[in-house]
Image (cartoon, rainbow, N blue to C red; front, side, top):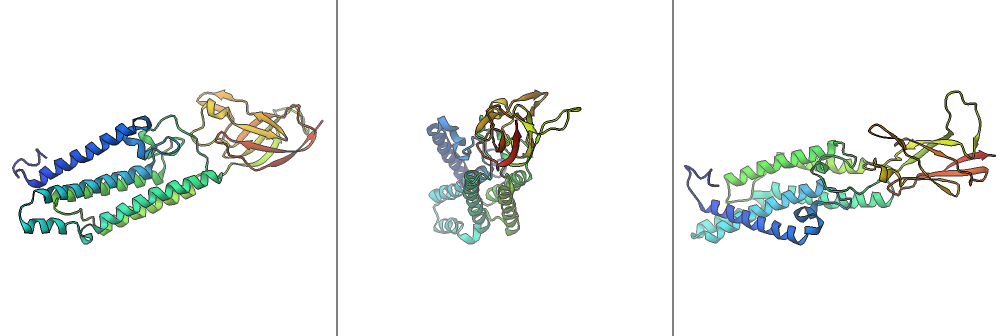
Length: 314
């Protein structure tokens, strides 16, 4: 405020802007103190999986910005002396002036609530696997649970940030009214939000067993599956995103009939060759009775696959 006041002079709007910033900063400081055991000021944007939520972060950014804009208007109204000046400031809160910004605020808040509901239902329905993270990271806003950048999250954050910068510039140029976000830019944000929600609906999927065969090395003779043999379970979704560490992979279990078999970990450079996301190798325990038995995988996130029947001989 001091730098931009050089040459232009100090004004009531600059005082209101500083006062509004102090009020918002004080509120965030109080919130961080009360939630100091759960992430401080970041507590509202940390999801149930202990990662930063992209939808909540975008919504919180817009809420704070709109609250700041209203406080700037309130500060100017408090020091305005003329009747006409007060009427002009009050008219700056009319819906026609800030319809675009209010629409974007409503949509991003609705997206945050909707995404939380969608993710929760998909996890309960075993159509999405979630593994709790060790701690929140800034990269969570742009990546999936495995740390890979995702288009839906990146475009939502980038477009929302651009729209916020534009709205902040409009507020700085016209501090006597809500930022008049152009409808063209508002529609771009709405399309970005729709793309983000669609991406949340499309991600994930239940793990599935496609086939189970006897593990065979080069030179082995053809034979049926017997107790003590290794079997290869081929499918998809066995390793949930974010569960590539040994302590998470060790929680994976294969049910062979009524026997629970823990998947042996085979370390290689940079990770593990067994288990992998599409292939598991486990031994058939001696406790399995010969005959037709069912095989089922329970992933590290606690999600069960379909049952696949195999024949075990003596």
